[in-house]
Amino acid sequence: MHRHSSPSEASIATETSAPVLLFALHRYPDGGGISSILENYVAELEGPYEVHVAIVEPGPSEQYNLALDKSRVNVLGYSNAINPSLMPTSLFYTASVASFLRGIVKRISPQVVVTQDALYLPIPALVACRKSPTRVVVMDHGTLTNVYEQSWLPMIAERMGVVKSLLFKIGFHADRPWREMRWRLAVRYADEVWFTGEELRPWFQSAGPRAKEYSQSVPREYYPATSREREEAREELGLSEHARVFNSVGRLDGEKGLDDLIEVAERLAGSAVPWQLVVAGDGSLSPWLNKEVQRRGLEERVLFTGRLNRHELVRLQHASDFHVYAGTISCGVSICLLEAMASGVVPVVSDVPRAQVDLVGDSGWVFPAGDIGAFSSAFSAAIELPTGEHDNLRAKVLEQIGQLRRPTIATLLDDLLADRDNLRRL
Image 1 (cartoon, rainbow, N blue to C red):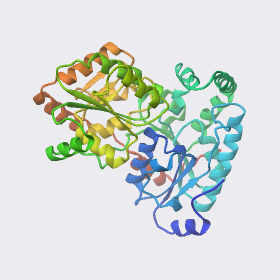
Image 2 (tube, rainbow, N blue to C red; image 1 turned 135 degrees about the vertical axis):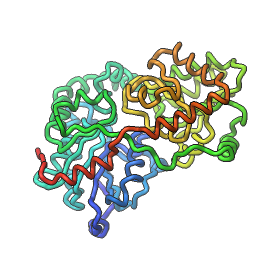
Image 3 (spheres, rainbow, N blue to C red; image 1 turned 120 degrees about the vertical axis):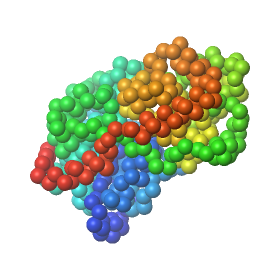
Image 4 (cartoon, rainbow, N blue to C red; image 1 turned 90 degrees about the vertical axis):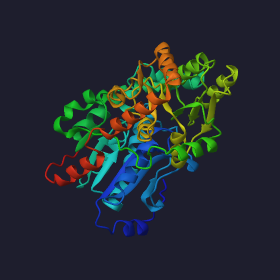
């Protein structure tokens, strides 16, 4: 076990009047939405709160984008041999992470620990905060619901060889009783459970008034581009000034509907209206996706950028007319969709999760997840959309994002700390 911070650094860091907040998450950077969610929370809360982060598994250092001093970032280190999804390694994971979090809680005495999933981290957090005044909040962005999706296990297993796939399936099925117990204990004993999107409501309803729905933070640095900024962004990315530009941003994994996206791109490659698709991100399907684009002769239509930092993502949104998301498994409202809409980019997205249907409204296109015909029709309509109608949709996009539901996580934290009497503990 190692940490970036030393006891002396931590003691200096906690000498402030701001409440101390600890976010615990399994992996950062993760190449997907959790990284953006955490970065948005830090940007919103640092200042009013003294924000610390506990990371079980560190991702690629070049993707690190937290605006925090290293003394606030605690890293356990992780081996995939101790997988939280499999029995018996999930038991070792729970014990190891509980010890890791207990050490941080003793050292910085946070007012609140917020776990970024409702499956793997709540029990370690509850154990770490036992017999302390620290509140425990459980959040989830899809980890809990994903493992119960019928398509999730086959999707994960197919990335492995035959032997590893078989062992993973055995361990995953053996872990089910402990998996059920973990999230039920989390819902029962956490001080509060926070969720966004209707998919998680049934899982948390037994928490009663402690279950609270919130809105994702809209990133502050995303804003509609001026004509000059749009031209500069397109020039920087090597995009045509006159083409309809679509972007697809996120982790390149099976649940993102990338096979449907490439199929639709091939169907519409012969369109008389010039268009280009920029795919930003990385993941397990990156090699396959590149090969498919070459095999189908889509090199002129589809551009890969790899994973981008926040500044580069803003530039991509400024260069874009449309944002595409074809996800098939509910992981909560796409952060990339929020970033795009905050930039005035018109969405062409699937109806998973359901909250995206309400968020988009009549400001873009929503198609049934997995329906290639409907997806193709929506994409084609976007390509053919007259400029004046695009401007009207852009105005509606900004209106929709401006009406995003409240409360935000900041409001929930303020309310939680104001309630000094209602403290639950395992």
